[in-house]
Each structure stands twice: as structure tokens, then as C-alpha cells.
Length: 211
Image (cartoon, rainbow, N blue to C red; front, side, top):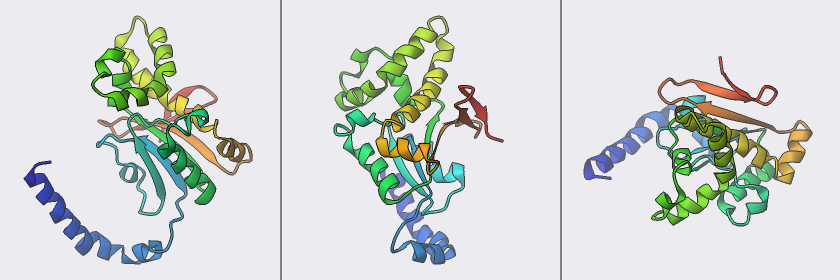
């Protein structure tokens, strides 16, 4: 970050305290002791994705987990990827969230990287290991789009969301609460350049535009 960018951020934090904080002082006062979010929002780390902006949520509503490719490690891998697994555990078992949303997006760099030859990531060992988690879905997408490279990236981004919903259900306490109707899980696909969000319909296996 260059100096101009840092100065801009410093100005904005002062503006926040003087404007936004003052406007929402009562809300922040209520939040000082505890949080009671209604939704665990799992999204990509991509700087173009703002969970609170696209959902119109206020501070305290979303418990947010962000990583490259909005990936949920399967329960069997939880010990190897404890950061994400512990956040899911805390959100469900301690905070008692009512919803979990996995939100993928268009032009996802993580999904694009997963479609490249593995040796292209040799200089990025941690990213390479992380993306190993979506190799199975990648292989299925490549097989299904053998003659349509243009379609491959979007299908990968959407299929990845569906795969993470399956991984969520591998967590026993998530699965139990979903079956008992105490927890809802949903897959979203956000188009950056149009602002559209498509919701996964498990009955049809398609993403449908939210309207």
C-alpha cells in the first residue's frame, strides 16, 4: 500500500468515528458486550466482495468467514484447517446462528487458479495446498466442459459453492441442526459487474436469480 492509500484510510477512520459511529452510537453501545449474529456468511477474500454491502446488513448481524475460494474444508480435514473449522464451530455451537450462507462470485481468482496446471502454483505452496481441497470438483467440471472452455470458469465457480454446501453437512452439529429445522444453509453466486445474486435451488440443481 502506498502512502497516499494509507493516508486515505487514516482519514476514513476519523470520518467513521465522527459520522457513521455518531449516527449509529446506540447500536454500537448495544454491541459492546456481546454479539448475536443471525447468519454465518462464508465468502471469498476477494476485495470486490463486501458481505455487509450486498446484504444491507448492519454490524452485529453477520459472522463472517473469508478465504480464497470461499472453501469449507470437509469435517475429516477440520484438524488440518482449524481456522475455518473453528469459526464454523463457534458460529453454530456458541453463537447459535440460524443461517449459513456460502457466497461464491464471478471472476474468482481462486477458482481460476484451480483450473490451471498444478505446477503453475509451485511458487505459492500455501495456496496450492489450500486449492487441493477443490480438486475433485475441478476435475468434474473439466470433464463436463471438455469442449467449452468459455463455460468452464462460471461452472467451476458455481459448482464450488454447491461442493461447500455438501462439506458443511459433513459437520455433525451442522447436519443435525439442518435436519431438525434449526439451521438453514444456502448457496449464493454473486455477479460483480451486475450486482445480481443467484441462489442455489437444491431441488432443481440450478442457481436462480433472487428477485
